[in-house]
Amino acid sequence: MKSKTIILAAAVGLVAGAPLAALAGPKEDLKAFREYYAKRFPGIPFDEFANGVYAIDAGMRAEWEQMEEFPPYELGLDIGKAEFYKKFKNGKSLADCFPNAEKGIKQNYPYWDPKRKEVITLELAINECRKANGEKPYKWKTGKLAAVSAYIGYLSRGKRINVIVPEDDPDALAWYERGKRFFYAKRGQLNFSCADCHVVNAGRRIRANLLSPALGHLTHFPVYRKKWEAKGTGPLAGFGTPHRRYAGCNKQVRAKPFKPQSVEYRSLEYFHTYMSNGLPINAPGMRM
Image (cartoon, rainbow, N blue to C red):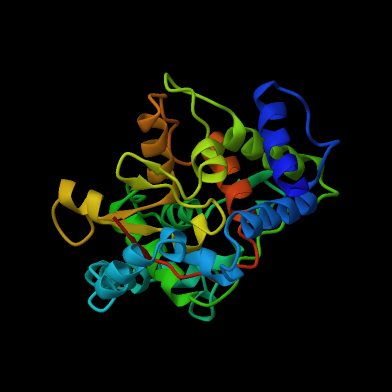
């Protein structure tokens, strides 16, 4: 009950604008987050939270396992792989910017860059590589950017998330705290927060939708959603980055979404991913 109290107290404090740095740092937050879900879903092994709702609903899991036999994201992964090794006009490629990708690097993103004093997401790094080599950046949120990121995630499968928040760096902590506030702050006409759905009501339903635990959310991004697939055309229609999903959630609570790779979404991704530290990467995930 203590861990649940910490999480809910954090939500109240953040909405009220109370500074929480004095209450708990990243390590304490992470410990409380894990303990909350362990008590909320007793008997679910820690690693299973990487599978989202499929860890907590047997019927949905069976359906998911059937889809994974012939996953619809495979063609998109092939496109992502081709783009990753495709030569730029200068003879280099994305692979030159990410020399350790084949060994697995997704687990370390997003990361804090002390020189730039900002959080660098994988998608930001991909497009910055293209721009640095004289190429036009990919469109944000979906398409080839999501496919390349998904391919890098696929190469990282099994690696455990290891996002670092240097607690001796006040700028890094400020980004982390900003993401934490975003996660717990209510917004939009419906007055919902990320935590309302994925902490307080995780495992419950809103209409036909089963709300997933926030623990493990970022293990399987970029994600492939059947809902997105139905709205577009081609093998990349169903792919989306975390910032595409964040924008969609903001719209669902009738709040104006922020731009992809904004400070708001990068700080949220920093906090959000850190809360899944220790879980295995299984990108790209398949979701409805």
